[in-house]
Length: 508
Ligand SMILES: [Zn+2]
Image 1: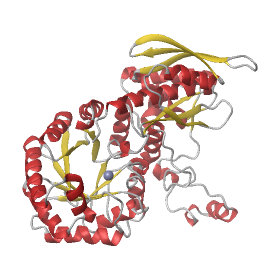
Image 2: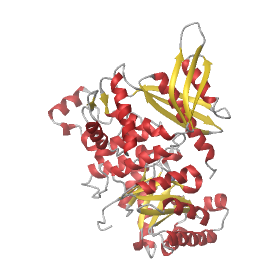
Image 3: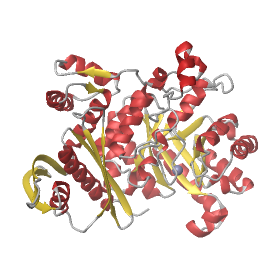
Image 4: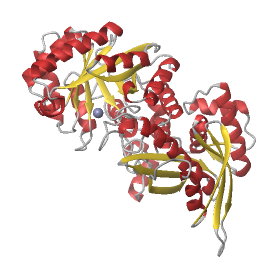
């Protein structure tokens, strides 16, 4: 890194983000998000936790093989087994990175690890040098760093750097620190660790007190040159620092924070929509940068000022985050070429077969819906991602009449085989869900069923979210269709696919 004010954006949407309740993603969804992140221009993608499950391993491995310029990273605990598995997953990446960690706070060392501090130091030397023998790029994290004792942290970091770590991440694992405190922590570490000039320091902040972005920016002021974050700020508990907020704060206030990133901010809106679409986790309307109202000026005084001069109330333009005034793009007569150009503009670069499938879906939609918007296209690409899913709904027949038994017949492709399922129920949605649940063992509980329109108009696609709970674990299914009942069945099937993945994950 030649520019000392260039901030490395380390995105962990696919690892820490995926750990949010209900955010689990299928293989194809992860691939699509990773491609979007590469288009966006993030520097490092943490694609998962290789040892957690075969699903995680495959996703990291596929993403590694696919991406052309972005560094791909897997998380690993401080054991040879974890680290070896991480390396196997990332070895084909253009720029592989192993990210290994161990807790350094008294609380975590005593109660979680059950290890005396000296043993933790030995573990650090052992795990980092083992990782460094496999991979040139090793990041080391002191879990619960902000609640660790300073003197111990200095020693731990010095050992990690000596053993070969070139990035040192100091996480605020529990979202406890404040901007001033975190800035001082980074400054102290850089000043007091004798070999600190041989590593890049990194922030990793959680939003339990709503301070994740402020803390991350403070860390940069304190000397950190890598920021770990997620799209829409998704993540454990209250989430991680939001990528879009960090990028736009640095861009908008470069006068007081003279730092740059490699992110093309014009893709932020699309990235946000995609992550919402695959996780089913909607952002609130008033969310900074990507919320529905982030650029809406409602009051008369504001609207009047905006008409006279947009800078009266606007500190950044909607275009700078990729939000267009009107995004009406296509209709029935749009051709393949226009469709391809539009997908590229939205950040999607599909393989030939995926493109053909998406184009066919687009034509089908255009037959029943006059105006096709960006949101429609994003949901089409999202829908086509589900092609390789275990359960897939391909046809439907609903009976919904007053005073007769309602029912649903669904034509499915299950693991490549055609099958029909049927059930009666209290209304067609209940019938469809009963038919689908008969396909799995156990009885996950339906926690949420939500329908909203992708765009305006009565011909709009219905976007359905289904949340299932099993033994405290939550999965969220998501699908869109102009037919609300079909969207409901597909969303439930998507949730079942994620439930199967979740069952496979080992407890960490
Ligand atoms: Zn975290």
